[in-house]
Image (cartoon, rainbow, N blue to C red; front, side, top):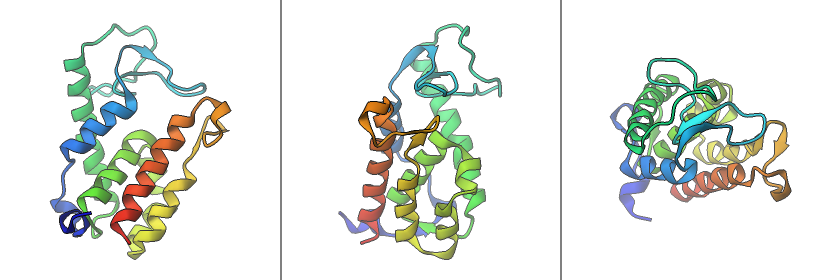
Length: 172
């Protein structure tokens, strides 16, 4: 790991990396039409968009969109999530990799979940390793343990484990 990715700077100076946006596209995939990605979840479209830029929630009867529109929705959503994350942990210093990890988490789980998490509490205390470890608590969806392959949500767990590995790698 290069020194650059381990350097921590004020969160206010960080922005979403191209790698983060590409990673979200890979993790979320693309769907032109609304789908319910996992049982008990809300409808998504594009690259996991649950709410349109105008604030309206995605509905199953909505019209299909293009990849270009999906990319626009993703960029818009990440921009909003960035503002929320920065407001949530204003005096925290993170590396670019850590910033991308927590931004990706908020993109998937929402700022409300992040704000109530032990991750946030650990970050505010400067306990970066414990914040990374706390990522592993978020392996459930719709009451199912996604670390169990037969629960048909294993991708949720894999994404969390990958976030953890990236985060802990910066903090060793």
